[in-house]
Image (cartoon, rainbow, N blue to C red; front, side):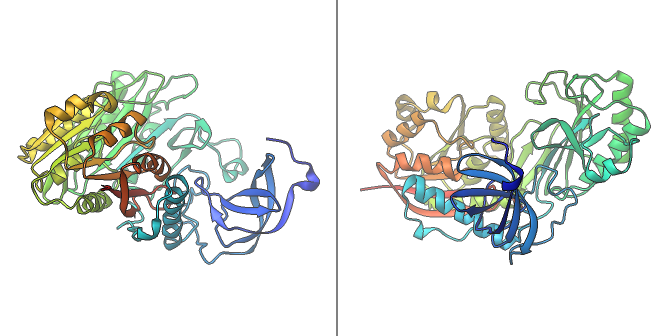
Length: 469
């Protein structure tokens, strides 16, 4: 972006009219679109330009002239530094309005869908402490706030918390996180303090050295708790010291695990899991079903809202009891097992083999015998031969990743001509792109957004497509 002359850096009396995905307010000065840090729709502000291109610029508020009716005081002291919860300066009711608006805009603009049928967005049951999984990073390069810098040179540089946006090697030390219920904060803070008191080194993300690397905490509505400590270059004595401390301080942990990861990336899917205490899994429950959650398992991170999302999916499908259902991108088979009791058969397909193993285990735990699961790339598995072997589905449920469905998969769905497709998506834009292709043979008959992640721009959306006659 271009440097801005000092005399052109300031623009006055800008009305903020929208909010962008990054949590920045959107305004306009003549033909220049402004993306304004921490601005809320309805604010009237003076701004200072930070970076500029031909038709848009990034800016910050230099003076708040008139606050929006939607503006509220952020409840987290880390707001604006931490990369999460970027919308918490806006009332929750306003967040819902703008999430619904984003879904409507995507479906109208990209898929030419008549959104007059859209139902009101379903609010999250909880707006704080709603996540069942958080991942924290140890670092010897703590992000220093302005207050820290003013405090002098003798700053503690070890941190346990979240990455600062756009700074992979800088970690914001988090004292209280409002995303996960206790004892999450207590566990994290105790482990950090213990490591500092015992001179156990924190990871250096540039040099790739240090003992403590990551901390993963998973909670369940059953009350069960999983804690995973990820070490890098730790001695056996250091591992034992940390794990022994966690076990003794928090005896109610159901699954206490550790990993030795000396790779250049943080992913644990190819790592050996070591059980220090308890089981190597916890149990989650939903509508009388039990789901086994391991350290590598995928499960919707908002447990209470996941039930609502799946209930809407089931309701849109309108099952009568005799249907053959294909569940695409089935993950650990949560949706497949959730709907299995109300249909004849469910066939699930997923790319990740370990997820398919979880799906089979979850069927077994719940004595569900009418599910079948297959692992492989969707575009390679879902062939004409596959459909001929398993039968033409009465309903297809598809819940792809953010990138949406591969074009070959969309083409296959058009060939299969299932009477109903229920499309669940965490990205309304890619969902709309796929629906635009499916409209060749399908009509959109129901739409319901679901808020899974309060104080963020993210929104789930469920769409029912029915075969046109």
